Amino acid sequence: MTYDIIIIGGGITGVSIAYELAKKKAGKILLLEKEFLSAGSSGSCAAGIRAQFGSEFNIGLMKLALEKFEVLAEELEYPADRIGLWQGGYLVMSSSQPEWESLKARVIVQHRLNVMTEVLTPGEVKYRFPDVNVDGCFGATYHSKDGHADPFYTVFAYGKAAERFGVEIRKRTEVTELVRDDQGIKGVRLADGDTIEAKQVLVATGAWTHHLMKTIGLDIPLWGERHEILITEPVERVFSPMVISFSLGYYIQQRPHGSFIMGLPPEQKHRWFDPAQFDISPTWGFLERMSDTVQRILPRFKGLNIVRQWAGLYEITPDSHHIIGPIEEVPGLFSAAGGSGHGFMYGPGLAPIMAEWMLGQSLSYDITRLNYQRFAKGELVIEPAVVG
Ligand SMILES: Cc1cc2nc3c(=O)[nH]c(=O)nc-3n(C[C@H](O)[C@H](O)[C@H](O)COP(=O)(O)OP(=O)(O)OC[C@H]3O[C@@H](n4cnc5c(N)ncnc54)[C@H](O)[C@@H]3O)c2cc1C
Image: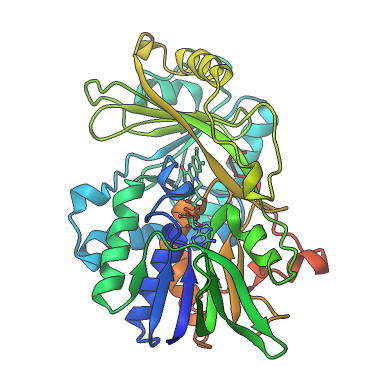
């Protein structure tokens, strides 16, 4: 059977683009996922969502994504309490004078784009968020519309809506190879040896993207990097923002049911291009570093029991931005991967634009700078506000 579009990967990126394409009546669409929806990074993440970026490009894009998150439950006809959008704000802490100056400079850009972030002195942080220890903090910025959602249900909601619009989703179906000829992409080969043809193929396989593109000789600069995270026992719901530091790398939030989720970047960074190298085993060192950090930042919650720790992969690119759009060497082939530590929040914002791009329509927001060609041209997308 021949499809108009095959999408590989059932994370937030793949399902949201599948939905947007189907909504635009893009023809026969097949989504292939080797495990289950949200089995990759999307199901491992903290699902934080923020417009507090530093570049106009990212602030504008994330403003669109936030607006989409706000209507997502209604649009996808999925229970709002499951998608679980919680807009308790992001409290971005500074830990040096230069960092503080840089955060304030970003707020000027955010205000220009109508992202009304507040600038708080340490005293104001203490007054507004008495649980936060402000020792060593030079000031913080706070945007009340930032927040987080439930990553699993968000992906499931997109998957269900895509199916309602006619997308065929096949789980437990691994693509082992892309298939091309001199004219362009032809389709995909599955683990059982079957070939499925399509006019367009979108690779939305997160950290697995380098490996899959390699099957037709493409060398995409995208690798997996282990990031650890933990969740505590639930306690009374008292803490609303995501408290985060880009320089120290921590982020801590309380979920609607009362558990705290928190993470820190790895001490040692590995660049894993080949899935055979992927190691997402949890470490004792992370538990110690994370416990020390949370006791320092939120001392009131000292003594909370940890119920689970896990690790997932950031899918990183040289500038920590997606590689998205057509792969020019292979007409009909597209990529949408590489969201690094912010690929969940970007999903709903990028998806409608990516659907426009695949269908040859004019783009409602110019994301062409995220194209793969930027590396050859040396035109990296620079963004200071990433966790990493
Ligand atoms: C600990 C941690 C915390 C994070 N916190 C945040 C956060 O707070 N906010 C945020 O925005 N982002 C966060 N991220 C990043 C975010 O999780 C990712 O950027 C995002 O989920 C990527 O989504 P994706 O759909 O592109 O990739 P994935 O979710 O990885 O989906 C790719 C899918 O492709 C499938 N696949 C791979 N190869 C094949 C194949 N050959 N055939 C078929 N299927 C295949 C995989 O099984 C997988 O399901 C975090 C990540 C981690 C690890």
